[in-house]
Length: 608
Ligand code: ADP
Image 1 (cartoon, protein in one colour):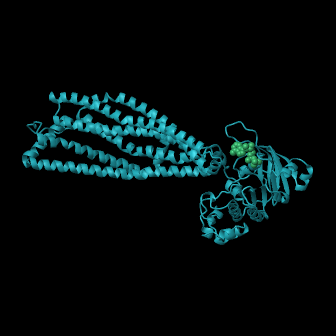
Image 2 (cartoon, protein in one colour):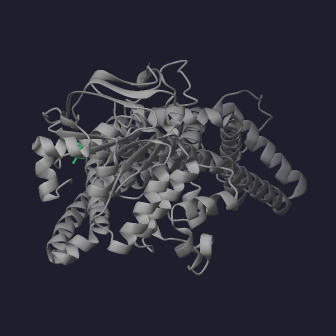
Image 3 (cartoon, helix red, strand yellow):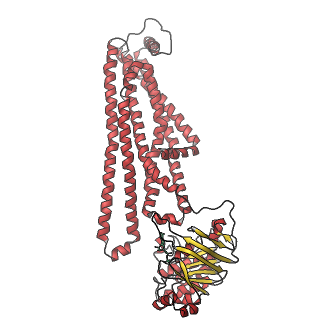
């Protein structure tokens, strides 16, 4: 249960609340117990079951002396004030104890609230922060739906099961200790009989707990799968519809859902088993006590009202014990979710920054790829995607990278902002290895415009100004103008304040591209990485996007994964890649004349 212990470590942020919870719960239990003790004189007064001692007994801290003294005092009171008045006083005392007990119970809950919600808030903050710093490679190997499920369902499960147990952990042991202490005080012998039923109870409880944990972990995994299916369907809805795979997808989902239900039903049945089981065991204990204790009373070894008090306190002891059992089971169940959650929180960040990194405040000379090798690490044996590649790009130059699909072009440019680190060789900017650089300052120098424009469900202005805390409307408008986007933005109903929907789906492909180009223009980085897209654009949009790109590349060092012949022809150098290596390089004319791979690509227009 070390995952649970880790969650409980968050309690250190709430010392005041934890102390308050424990303090108020002790008071709650003390007054609760006192109210039960007051039942004894009520019974005595009404039924007069015991004979009062003839003379005042000496007061001592043992059960017999205390009972005798209390009885003597009670009967003295009765004789002085009358039975009606006595009964009234004891009843008022009972009521006062009960009121105080419930007041402290509420104050206990009051302190637990911030702890519960606070722990979940901490966990949620931590995991979101983690997701933003995890390397890009992590999101390739993990299904997005499963990640979402860990951040929502597993966290919810932790909240429900683990954090709910916080109250039980704070309250029930106090309850059990004080109640059991009272029972021992009343009759150690009877309490001993009760202890006999504990070993079999513990055995059953542990068995149920283990099975719950197994099922819970299976259930959360299945829920993760279910979320993945939903996420996949939502992302690929167009493809699913166009290939008419709705029925298949639905059947697949139904199967996963039924699987999940089966696991959850099994778990619910196990969980519900623990309450009746502990109740039965408690009743067996009670019956033993009635038989054995009844004999003690009949033999005159115990006052009948004390015996009744024993039974009442005993009956009240069962409930916190049950609650501890429930909390234990919940903790085991939550442990499975916590394990999944912490797996995400502890995921290897891989792309780590050196201590005292060099801050790159400007780009002055050149980018060098020096004998770089890279293989995707996704658990399977892989061919190298970048294979001993060397390339120098001087400042101010535009380099076009072309090659067949899968040649490694995207991977090559992804290495520059350190989305991945190469396994061999070195990449340097101005002679400084990327590994020595402050990652934030490195990325600050790089603008990225990719095929899949990454837009957020926000206003156009915020999308353009993404990454800038303070920006002027003027600057945003200027960037949009340079990106040939101002005109269509002005025609939108709310202009720059128009909400563009999830991932910018209210805009056309060309419009989305121009927004992301405007974003790069506003960032104004000296180095530009461009993954051109042509496929999604009609001729008119393509022209506008091309104009915007030309504006963006002006005066910058650009690495362009080129798909348009026009871009390629204008590039100062063309690098032709195949199977992770550079196979040809030069200008358009030189390479075309060479008659090699580049020639073939141009002829077939297949710069994918
Ligand atoms: P290009 O951009 O030239 O089409 P990529 O750099 O995208 O090529 O991909 C190069 C090779 O690496 C391909 O064989 C592709 O299957 C593989 N690849 C790309 N991304 C990943 C990834 N995240 N995990 C594993 N393999 C990948």
